[in-house]
Image (cartoon, rainbow, N blue to C red):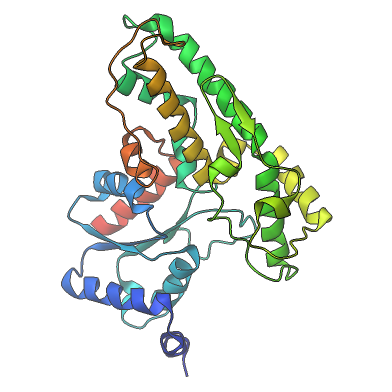
Length: 314
């Protein structure tokens, strides 16, 4: 039994998505088919439209990183579809040991996930200008420095507060990779309200130094001290803006912007010289779409899409 037949007979999510892939290819043979982990398409779509063309590609929401890679493996060896136009998009995650088998077909985010492209000073300044009408040079320039300083201070406090949490998650991933963990850590179930409290004047850490107090659904959670120290050393020496888990980074940003909006529309604002209307409303479930226009586009993504566009045009 060959590899393709074996993978198809095993079933699973990648088989379901493979069927979706074949249907798209059957109808749009020349189109690029983009396979995403999940909601990432909300970030990638406008960037792909710009480089490839709005009607020249179709997306597949696979539902997970492993499914994307399984689907890639299945397509790449298939006697019919291996020559199809397709690209895969995955998060770097904490998988530092991952070796990209085909860099021209698989894009790996430059940071933990695409959400990391949403949270930094440059992005904040774009939001501040477009949504709060505050820039360094307009009539509200007096509020500009205070707002930027407040963001940078809160973001620094946030990163300090969630450092230990990220160390625990990365340490457990190292243990999983080495076969030392009995089960997967349910990181998705951790709400930011269990980690920090956010205001425009302070970010406070609210979780304890015991990982078992945070991951309560994990019986007898024990983290290898060697793995924790290794994770700590790696994250300490890395650009945390990109290295920390992106969903917490973006949720912090959403909460901070929400607090900033509340201050802007209040009768007695603290960071703004006067009250003003702000139409920005950010939802937890759709923040990726709502802030997509302000997010950074790393050079590695531009380069990946440029090469893809050139190959499609050839």
